[in-house]
Length: 366
Ligand SMILES: *Cc1c(COP(=O)(O)O)cnc(C)c1O
Image (cartoon, rainbow, N blue to C red):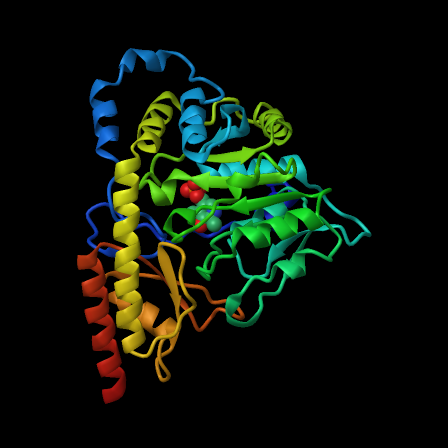
């Protein structure tokens, strides 16, 4: 609290990111869903040949090269793409552009009760009223829950975080058909890791009320670069640009644009790293299941697992932290018996599993 802060800043509860270790601290970092693999080698080539003198000039406000690379990958037009400083910024601009405070009405923005914890923070910060829709058995999102409820908008992470579950394109279509007058936001931060996934971006030519948000942070190993984008109808994209140009007209710098475009174009490397993460995930699921953990099927680069009877999630989180292994624990109702574990390299997962086995043994001895 400070007398120099306004009421909003005094009352807000900001988002809490997973911890980042200090320089030189050796940890196995499985707590923020970063990619364990480095960005495409094409990024290193760009860095080596980058024209430093060009940094004198402001960057392209629309990040055209990035929009073109996204358009080629997703089968949309460059005019259907909006680029921001990480998808968190794109999401924040969506909140400011498409929704507002609903007073004395049911028309609130619907979000799953358990989802990306930034959504309620944006809602507080930008005065958007939300209604949290409870999940079904096994953390399932049921499309029907979003089809008969009056609302001012809908935001769903697909695959959802931290639950790792995915809903199919037909369900998204059903939600869009039932809500032609609301903007429906699908946050596809983890879509790259869902097998046989059909992106909601394919539906953009059909629905003028759909916005799909993606990021280079997870799938492209570029969390440190800060680049995300939205895919939507030109009408929605124009709204986002109006918000951007009332806030920060240059969200992506010249270097970020050049590196992002190179990473987006390198399809072979993208496929290789995503497949590596998926196969490590399958191995981790098998090994943890054999140890008595339970978890929903994961379509993401993390799993959401409940330790076997007799071992508390919070205790395991704390004990692993002492051993230099960071995972994520949320001390919140509904999910406080679960741990979110990011997929690392095979070697990191081996160390993680060995440490878990030690904990299980210690638990039995005590
Ligand atoms: C990580 C994450 C983001 C944020 O990604 P950035 O592009 O790094 O800001 C957005 N949505 C969800 C669901 C995420 O997990």
